[in-house]
Image (cartoon, rainbow, N blue to C red; front, side, top):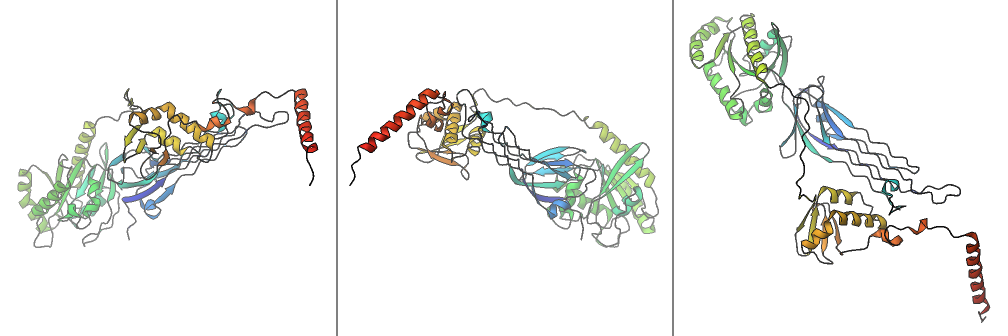
Length: 478
């Protein structure tokens, strides 16, 4: 069984952010020293990194579920939680990242290229960070955000300069074994090669890589044989080399018809019309093969192909072929635009972008969508009235209440914040008092009122005792 895997579905989950801490500093003679709750740590990211030492996606085939660590919660004493550790996933050079719908998310080429497949959740703010002149001692903290999770597809497209294509047993593996130091499995039966083989060739001052693409037969572009699995490996190549068997033992085949069949499969696969072609007539050390090669060579040259007669077994014509390939590869490299430094693309928001939308769905139901409102909802502890009031304040400042009124919302109508499958729904009450006002007027906190003088406290205590005594004296026993 082969250990080469070039397509996997990966389930990735970033770490959750740690919750913020709600704490009040306490020490002798300072019973309420102010809020000192620390922030929660950020959740770890899931990062794909190109590693030249990795050549297959086999590890992810066996272990498709990958999750980064969570951030730690904040603590009292202004101690922030530890950030979660990023999960680094090494992938081969040439890996393409797709979403579940087949849309390309990233094309990872070049050692060290990175892509964040899942972002870690933000850590929640502690009450020390939420304190302000109007809210001196918040009795709540924000929750950490959950990390992003989802499914991605990794596809490996071999990064090579030259692709050898042709029928099974045409001699592609033998040819790559003599052009380079690669040692692929070689036999005289179909589908000997079950994985793309790579070899490095040096011709003069040019060093290039050659890939042996296996399993092309009629119908390969529609899924017959092994071709559909490996046709993607020719997409990055600069030149295609047709390896034709001039000594085939099959009576219904000949090199020209083999070439036409493979070209038709490449045409149906698409995207390869601009690649230069070279035709290699292999096995010319056999007398019948030599005669057939001399017979069909004029016809192939009339079609515009450069034709080389070689023998992988007898090492004939290999030097001329290797230098011809080096010339084409060098021209292709020179024509490529030089790699630019990393660019930062700035996409400013429109001046009328409010950052959220309000839409009316069913009768009496309004849905609010937007990054900020949905993130704030995820950060809110709905078991804490003050936290709910803080959320109401934030939504009001963002303009959500004003937009609901413009959309025709009335008191008692349902408002949903978030997508249909994960939304917070509540009955809307315009100008609803926020939970923070339960502690008194907005911005005030009775816990921070100036303490009463000792003499006043004694007088109040004596008055309470006298009042209790009077009640006792007026009590009539049964």
